[in-house]
Amino acid sequence: MNEISYTIDGFNHCEFYVGNAKQTAFYYCSTMGFKPIAYCGLETGNRNKVSYVLNQNKINLLITSPLKNNTEIGAHIERHGDGIKDVAFTVDDSELAWKTSLNRGAKSAIEPKEIKDSNGVAVISAIKTFGDTTHSFIERKNYHGVFLPRYHNNENKFTYDETGLIHIDHIVGNQEEGDMKNVCEYYENVFGWHRFWTVDDKDITTKYSSLRSIVMANNNEKVKIPINEPAEGLKKSQIQEFIDFYGTAGIQHLAFSTKDIIKTVKKMRKNGVEFLPTPSSYYDELRKRIGDIDEDIEELKRLGILIDLDENGYMLQIFTKPLQDRPTLFFEIIQRKGSNSFGKGNFKALFESIEREQQKRGNL
Image (cartoon, rainbow, N blue to C red; front, top):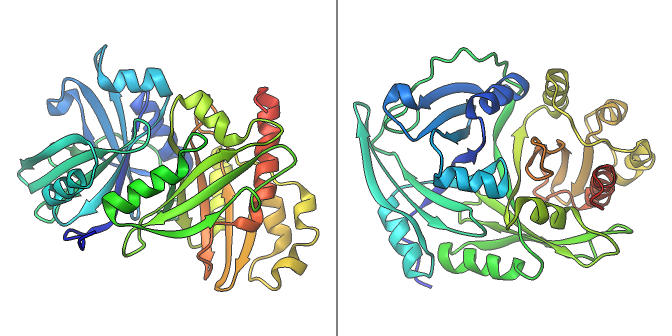
């Protein structure tokens, strides 16, 4: 493969397709501390859809709903329920990124187009990836507005109080069984990405279910996308449950980083966010397994925060319950203290917690 001649700097935003954008945006603002910064809809001249841009530090979420029947957005919601349609990357050359991707086998979702307003010019394009998910290439080096052209500053007075979320650590894509390697090869061939981390069903297994995962990363490793698939087990894994209710491969969860996970989780819990419970037995041998850490283990136990260790340090993480009625999309909160891993030592406890929730739903 020839050397890539465009640069992916990092995640630009994630676009959610949802049934009611205003209510979804209000929920993320009031419970997770996102600030509404931009808007497009009827008041800005868009007759087909409405979108709210939410921000917290380096995280941008774009919450979109259709304004008419029989639209592509509506069809996506009908098939998948509320979920993530697009994972957008910040690039230095959108047209070149699109052309390069197509030359390497990708299929186009949006041809490069220039959009402008009084704050400058941006170029956007997009390609298709797994399931109905797309990747947009956002070039905004000549744009100086709050988000993108044609979005106005948001005048909605949603209540928000920042919870300390900093940036997107990683985004997880779930695949049907047998598709993981092909999807990883797609990222290798189309983007020139490399395999950053991997585990198989011998590493991540419980009595009932297991998974395989390969983490793909771009050149500067600011973008990491774990690609998961279910492995055969006695009962249905959480990956297969996602596929069953989402309808295809898709984005399972976003992981948001924080510099103080205890403070972040306390605020989010107080605001009404529900997290997966962790059994108290998880913490019985924790100090022996992890060693000395800065945090009070009893406080981590009260909050249900998981801890894992690698050769570079440790990390703390916790997972929300699904954020909509379908058991599909959820969020992860993560604090890294040197560790670059993805919580391999926590997967058994996490899976067992998810399986208890699946049992309640009748989906195990």
